[in-house]
Image (cartoon, rainbow, N blue to C red; front, side):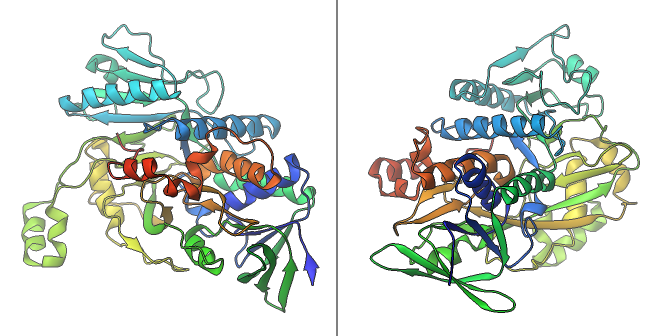
Length: 458
């Protein structure tokens, strides 16, 4: 039998960040990362790799967690010569709906109250709005908060590629993207240098005695392992619930499959310096009369004629010389059981491109001559209110970090720091209770859940 101070099940970015903070910042060096796959290869490499501190309430816990995570990423970028290509171009929400202007303003005001930074309203063409400093690849010397522009001349001046009917944009400023793989590998390399070990294998059991973690059983390729340890961490990503069941805990999470498509934008529809571009309005897709008749014939295809939700978005992808863009649209989310090789929807690229053309008319040129798309996706693990689980489990010595649905990359640094602080027994930030499993035992929190809506929507 071998030993470890901590065993972490899962080597996605959440598990790696936890190991990094335990070893590098808390000097808990005998940490064992266990995963049946190589690190960062199940869902962490399927990310859109974006980040934001834009989290309307209720409460300010998510804004504070994200601000902390971005602080950490900026420090890591500075110390690594920005190895993971952090930028701060922002999220740009655009709309052609006059009624949405008020919701943008209210969301910006609420976000400001919660600590995301001030909202600046630009109503004239002479407003002092600057989309980027000289180098859009940088991550510092940028404003925080958000800029709401309701002057169409100012919008056309800075974003001539948006649809002419765009009447307002909301530019969220402490946001952007990065190379998730490089961020994860940088933290993993530092953790390994400080004593963390990695083991390929599957956790098959957690032996408890007196409601305390005693040993972790691992099925490895060559032999079974029995690891004596007082601490076990469920960081199993899409398999969070399955691993929780090994501990006898029914974690309140479910999984959805989310897809994205990469496309060679050889026409340059999306400028290389653009922020993340998001269309804020629902829409119906622009099918031809013949296509509509065909879709109406079969019940399985009639949904293509229905209204699609807001939120189709895109951003430039790749370094100098790249023409790639990423396109995403969560229009058809379904609860599914995670599988090693999820089935992708072959219609997704065409639907996403047609939807994006509402915001970016230049995309219409790809409708009949689409470059070969690269389609992939991964699982979102969610709680009902889409807030993470970070903290202790009922078994002494057992912890969880997960349900980082759609924001695992951006939250990983602060989430890993927070869980490592729980494990080390050090002073916790006062937002820590907002993410523990025990929050569901609070009657006031259960009452709040009854009227909850997803907080990342505008």
